Amino acid sequence: MAPRSVVRKFLARPQHEGLGAVVRRSIGRFELRYFDPFLVLDEFSVSAPAGFLDHPHRGFETVTYMLQGAVTHEDFEGHKGTIEAGDLQWMTAGRGILHSEMPAAEGTQKGLQLWINLSSKNKMIQPRYQEISSENIAEATKDGIKVRIIAGEALGKKSPIYTRTPTMYLDFTLNPGAHLQQPIPKSYNSFVYVLEGEGIFDSRTSPTSAHHLLLLSSSGDGLEACNKSTKPLRFILVGGEPLGEPVAQLGPFVMNTQQEIDQTVEDFENYANGFEKAKHWRSEARIGLDY
Image (cartoon, rainbow, N blue to C red; front, side):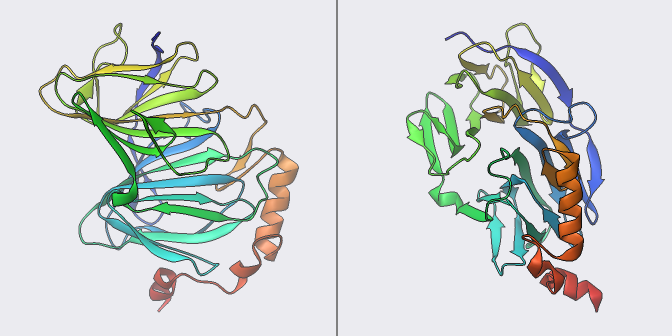
């Protein structure tokens, strides 16, 4: 296998977001506004009463993967549930969602949220959820390597998640001394985000530690990684088919043109074209704060 090289590396620094939450944003900030088809990657940390109160989305998908604790999700369609450690929620916002995400356990809740852009033909589809509990996420182990398959396939196992924008999302843990060779589809843009420990992802670079994002080159067959430290290495490998379309973004609205963004703002303000139910809906968390 010809491995992909590391072309950019930077540290995701903490910043405040939502209602008192702290996120380490690696994609979607000034160093890297967009990595087609990925809009945002946040490693979030939140403790009650902080959280992400009622907010809208249109034109993309949000993928929430919990690492520690739990958050309660609810939206204006009446969908409600708790995402616990190891659980996955793959939400297609499509034409419009208004929802909240708030802590559901004591202490600090930690997780990852990835925003994946949708093509112009899919931006106004009906919202949809795909949810998998931790025990039902596909896993495989081999030669000191453990992988949880959020999307795509690895070590002979596949995820049931349907990706409108073709995507792979793998959560790897490498024991000390383990060596990984993971294929990546040739057309995909791809990156690594390190969660714990330190690893070598390019023989020409020094070991990379937690909270660093590594952008991989477009040439090469896959990722080569090894753990030469004395502690486990945990990281995610994410790849996706570039859309190659113009991006117009205003916060949680992502379309192709400024005219479409203007229309989205008008739709949201007038409770129209997918936002009708936003007029009278308040999350339980929001109602609790209003009293």
